[in-house]
Length: 427
Image 1: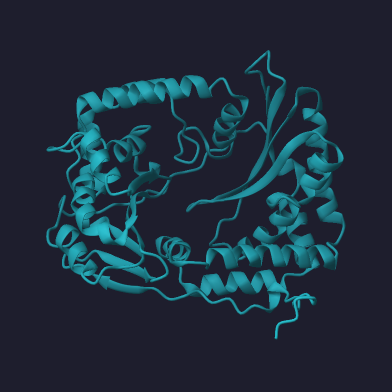
Image 2 (image 1 turned 90 degrees about the vertical axis):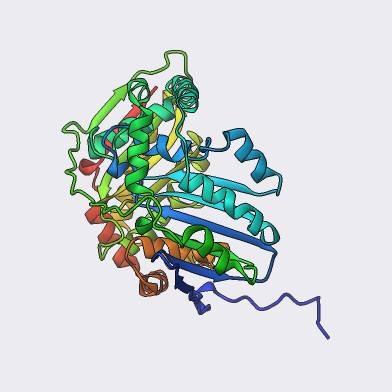
């Protein structure tokens, strides 16, 4: 009989043998690869179509975002309202997203309704209208959003720091503008759609409870024709043009009480041998709520409600970006403390207690990412889209379990030098 007066034995996360569940795969009749993570835990399903249609491939600013957004806003036979009503009738939803490299459409629904919803998703992906009326509405909405956002110091700071790191003409540094929205034309969006949202550029990721006829349904709606024709997408090698100056102070709201602080520098991305260890170092430094930046600048000094450091992991290059908002009168003091924490990482070895804490934290996050088919397929999607395999996952686990204090100090000495960072305050 279970003795509830005694606490269960504690098991360190390092002792867990984490396994990435393998996916199933097949190919539709027209050659589209499908990656499947089946699960019978719940009667729900996630279906995602991914295309190389991100900002990297734009010929003009906001082209990728506008194309992705407007695909769902009307077809040759149904209006945006009718499409949305047909989705909501079944309690489903379709999300759209576009990033630097990829654009996607993902549908979440109850498994029993997938046969009714599949033609709706097909209509959205294969038959968008890009009507002048919807484009005009899109421009009005997002120009108004931009007007409001430009009054916020944190939004302005995010725009500037990306431009300093990568250059204003690079996809990683390009920002929205009123002029860019005004320049968008329906013909341009149709051309971008026809080139990038094609059958031969599509990858499909599926997770959840699959009806018995799911593969046949998917093939019927997306695999029987070479929709939109065949298109070869070339990923151009675009030069990064970082700013020459490193320190910036910008006035944006003379009545504001807070300043937005950004301290950032280019970093290796996931293909570099240091990247996995850099993730661990960054977690200690500012990557979680118990980090050193939070303990010092939030808990001890009270300068901010929160401060974080994040590793950007783009296809071409990475970056480390430290972000916070602090009172106008303590912005400079906050920056000083950030550099003090960098120096401490360089000069002092991390003790075993902090190492163990962060190991357990990061392995715990990984456990959460493996909890359920939806989470596991996202892991696989990241690996597949970045030309990696399961070995990358297991190397990362091994790095978390074995990284040493000396490894972290070496990385800090190499990558946390004040002179390498761009420094920005927007008040």
